[in-house]
Length: 334
Ligand SMILES: [Mn+2]
Image (cartoon, rainbow, N blue to C red):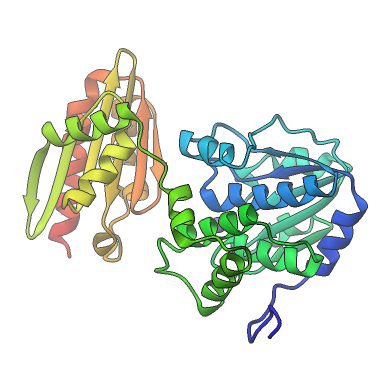
């Protein structure tokens, strides 16, 4: 049975490989605030290129989390400043112009490749020499598997682990997995003798001591508000507010708001369970923006995960109160 099995393979892979073969230096770009899938896709390509004696660096716009830098470290790689004079630029796991320096890519004279699994934006795609965009792929690393196969590059253990890590994280532990992603995972891991435990070990990096303390203090200082059968949890810590907000949901809250304030700086992180976002709760659009002015800053994010930042540290308690009452108002309508 060929690696294609009964599955549809992403298109334009041959064109992308043509450009990859003819260039000798590469700038690989993962998206802003990179997740495992985008950075793993860049790692896979960097490893394959380096084995061929080509130069490849990985860049992102803005900072990367400590989880991402340690993930890269496991492959002996780190982020570099972007060099837009590379022979070939590959943008991975995004075609959203706000998630990388689109203007710099556009004005570079390099060959340009886009590899992504998000819904395509024609205007952005048009700036690339080739766009491998497959919305049916659960992760960009799933596309990278097919790229390596078409290229004829052997899939090493490191590459197989990176492919699998992208699939596991972008499907939220297989909830969004497809038969093809299970096939890719099985072929990649089976081909090099890696185990699924190796993949989990790579994704679940140990939590830093200070983050553990923040989570436990967040739980200790917890205030609970009940509305109907839902529980809203509120707490304050000095850092890791996002991690604390996430852990409060794991403990049983339906919505959490965690604030962190110090002289001249205030941050609020919020999380909500899918059960409520499916009913229309949108933290980034409808809840946190209500406190942006009060804290003297900005708010935004997704339905289930959002944040606000500002300069009025004194406004934290009042802001948390507003967030809770807005969620209560929403719950009363469902
Ligand atoms: Mn992705």
